[in-house]
Amino acid sequence: MTQVIVALDVDTILKEEELLKSLKGTITHFKVGLKLFTAHGKRAVDLVHQSGGKVFLDLKFLDIPQTVADAVREAQRLGVDAVSVHLWGGTEMIKAATQVQPRPRIWGVTVLTSMVGKDVKVLHPHATLATLVKNLAKMGWVNGIDGTICSGQEVADLRKSLSHLDMRFVVPGIRPAGGAAHDQRRTMTPGEAAKLGIDYIVVGRPITMAPNPLKAAHDILREMQAAAPSSLEAT
Ligand code: C5P
Image (cartoon, rainbow, N blue to C red):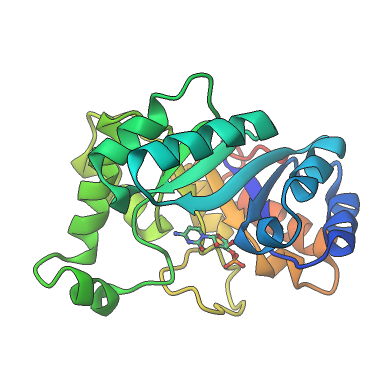
């Protein structure tokens, strides 16, 4: 079943409230990321909870192990459902994060969906983007993460090459066919994601910047339903 997480990448509490109000009953998972959390902190998280939604706190933790473990502990106190960590932080950092108990679900970022091969070459001249994603995903899973964040384009290969791991996927960079890509590069349509049975898709601007966000959300859900009638969980 594929669930939609709407990325609340807005700058005011008023805009957040409007989105939550218009999407209530259609979407239950919301992402609070760097923009909204930096501007409004706990209040932005509490608003989602008050409207009955679940929060994915996407602050992409990347720091020394103790600092990341402490941040995961604080996220638990905020009551969020999930947080993200950059798998680039390495084995010790991931272990420190996943060993926190109780804790939110931890989703590991492999390579940002705004990056392409040449970006990776600058950092790792001898690794391809695909190899890097695979190695990071594997390291995350053996150290206890609950979901891999990657491009939809990588899911089939990861499932095949790491078939011994029961991976779940969280996929941003979702763009309805013909929609603007913005800064995303490794994109996939909602229909393709539903067909692949991706667990969560993260959708921001195609919904939040639409003239009618509720209609945009319904269009995406309809596209998913048409592509994979049995694999959609609407909320
Ligand atoms: O507006 P758009 O649909 O591109 O939003 C995608 C969201 O997913 C953004 O909030 C971005 O921070 C997040 N994200 C991403 N790529 C990743 C991880 C998270 O685009 N690898």
